[in-house]
Image 1 (cartoon, rainbow, N blue to C red):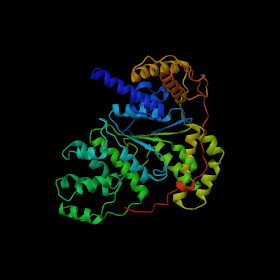
Image 2: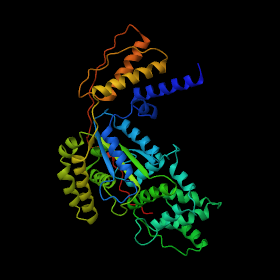
Image 3: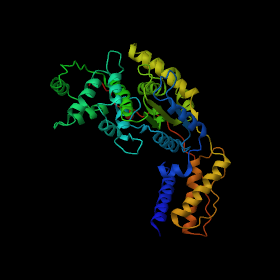
Image 4: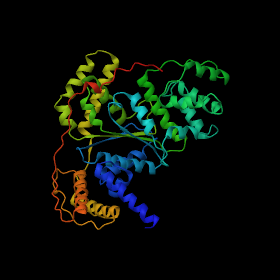
Length: 418
């Protein structure tokens, strides 16, 4: 067997195994595409608007049932964005990465950031590629300096210091990059290096952790542009976990969702865009069944503070977006199913070096998900390959979403300051 044929067979095997387990790998997505033309068009338009002044929404909200292919579509959008020159982060909402905590979301975004050439560690790579003599560096410094800048003085000071300390032996340049990425940075160290560079003694006031995380997102998006990328695209998966938080954290999560999907009034030209995927029954199961539309804003406003009133207002905005602006994944039609079947049959034949026969699979119903069709076909080919006389009969067991509250998903309120 030639090396080329071996590589093709391994690629086909990777695609089949990914599709069998429901993991939207690059091979799997390349094999099937997305089948979501409207979402692709809306996403392309979103990318075209990155870096321009946006007074409208800067994000997309996708909805689909369990197994409908949301993660598959997000993987497809990942490669569309990378191919267009954007840095991309995939963020799965979880206990460790709760949507209501922007600092933890930032950490996940930085850790998963990929540059357009596919390299991981995109933030460190972008920082290493900064040229202090370039117009791009000058523009980044101009943007983050001055009284009207949408970031605190920590950013222009550390950016100015960064090229000056890169050759130093105390690893302060690495500490600066880690600060941009979410770590703390000692005030005394910044002041010491600033004094040595003739910058005087900066004030460096403390910044609330949530606000600092938002500023870091703005800065990193501009850092990627300074490094030659088009912008930064964040793709959020499994956002329906919001429905399992306790009421207060649901309110905060709704507010953060509004921030990601709506324009940034402090930085309307931010080269940053977001796509959020959640289950399509969230409106009925959470906003209506739990009466979040009424209960959440009322409970938050009852705290009688300006901060909670703002959170309540943003939460109402997000619930309106869930109700009215969610882009639903299209169910596969006969033409798409026929295409997927033929493609998978050829892949299975190539992966296992045999001639996969026709199999029955599942009855074509409007309620059946693409993942269910795919797994049924693959499982039946597996069984027939092992026993050519076997007559498989696949059945579907419905899986419903669970939105019961889980208090253990809540993290303590983070009051840390920088």
